[in-house]
Length: 178
View 1 (cartoon, rainbow, N blue to C red):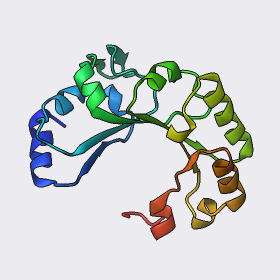
View 2 (cartoon, rainbow, N blue to C red; view 1 turned 45 degrees about the horizontal axis):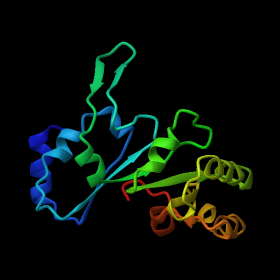
View 3 (cartoon, rainbow, N blue to C red; view 1 turned 120 degrees about the horizontal axis):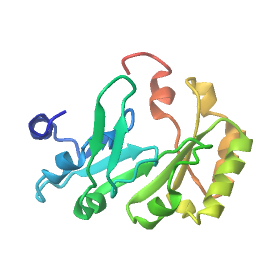
View 4 (cartoon, one colour; view 1 turned 135 degrees about the horizontal axis):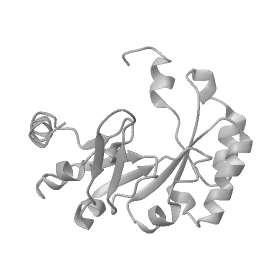
């Protein structure tokens, strides 16, 4: 999406929160989009990332058989204006937890399937001294039953993490288009 399309979309869409997600948003030069939003725009802007690309550093990547992607560093004013949801895979060793922990406008989100993976979340939280109040844990699954795993939800809450169910699954199941 280019800058003009983004600004036009914001003009017609009056939602209070705008979320940039899908794939890895930080592979795109989205800082120019957020940097062009006026200060009078009172909406919250969120970016969901896997945490492997830092917004404050340049990034270059060649798509196999495709183009060279180059991302410029975000200005710090843009970084601090965005609410970041960092959602790394449990075994993602490329996530720079130390960097993300230092930003005040970041929460971490982990998706787990069992208590063993929850124990890995504990290890990450402990090793990188993450604030448990800013850690959200969800349960992987595409059925309502998967989200009602009370044993696992109790384990998440007993460790003082936030439980983040897949609300669309609870409401509509795994129906396409919802």
